[in-house]
Image (cartoon, rainbow, N blue to C red; front, side, top):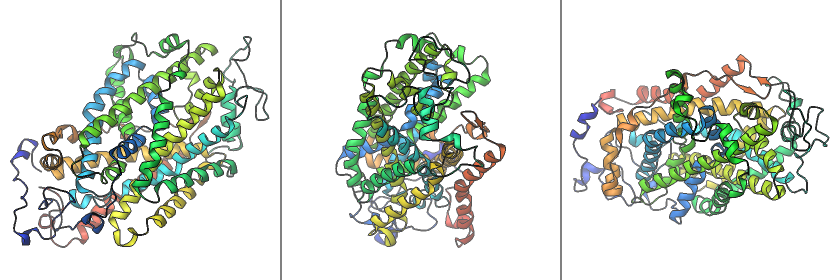
Length: 584
């Protein structure tokens, strides 16, 4: 391996004036100013798939179509629930310091790297590795994207269920007079003479757990029960929208995100979510300047956890490693300014997270004040329950609650759909580029087959105990695996492909803007991989065997990486050095 300080001594890539015979089989890019470019890492001269060798590859109709698609993917439901919870757990406003620093030195460079690689090589998450480091393949990325679709669209289906019930004069989660309510239901907004106890449940919580999920009919993962047909119908409608948005390619999905992304951003930034008690509520949550890093981290171990959480949050928020950025940017013009795109998208993503955090801190603080309990007793779960209990409960006690409930759940649906579009497009693009002869003229059938697989894979999340499955998939099917994949991706690009090659790629596309912050890509903290999660949901604690199942689920996607490595080394003729499978 070449030391970092010697990378700049590598010979420059051959220029277009090479002998034509020497250029046979080299990589070419439509619109590239350097048709003689060859990869140092190819096991043999690898021709680009036919779909990228011609001008027939789809392109975005407008630059804004691409930007909205990337923003729609990056700004997802996690910005609304995960960031506020992680921020609160790590000291409120003080958490913004490590969060911003990790974004600058970790998240944004990785985000920029994927946009640049996809735009330069003009191919998806599977085929791109034959040009970068052929000992790798993108199958693990596609499997992870499938796991995401198995649970993420169920959350959108829950939002659609809420959206339907929002069209009522009195929102059904406002009071305790419904058939699904129990004697523990306590409406502390309805009267001043209420004592909140550990067994008390709000109307919003009982609506979510006993009417939407009906989770009381399941005893846990061993007995998830039957499928909720109402949720299955909602999920069917969601996948119908997804299919007709993706079946014709980026020209169709690019038009759809004009509606979904704009709606989501307008709703997310709507000022009407603020409450008159916001200052006192934010102070109660530790968001105002009185909180400092020193108060959060009393010892080095706690401070270390804060920085690890900041790195993990920015990674999941921006979304490198899912193959989506590679796919979406591959439809860009070769000279598109992806550097500016990365900066703009990252700023919008962080701004949305900050606004969401401000709103939910206000709501949590106000509710804790009303109940006379601590904030952590209000937010009992860091998952989607924040979206389906905390927000609806606050909205139910606003003036014009019906209107704001409709607006809020429209935002949730559109945020979710935009992320689903990106995740499934990553799989579609990867398959089309890897197998152009089979699927290039059958995109509609490929999309239909993928949607059917995702729908069937989601059925377990639609059961009475489906919320338990959702949390397990989120934590293990995606969480650990995607961090490991992102880690290996950064190593492959920075060490095997080389900072020098990446910098030259950027210079060819962007000119003077092609300076790659290579050092930021070479060293990644993967400490979150070493933590064994202790999973709980409401009053249910996940058994030890479910943690084992979760790790096996994570390995089922990650194992494709070593399997393909062994296959490549065993079946490629010649020695490793002769085939140059990895860079020296």
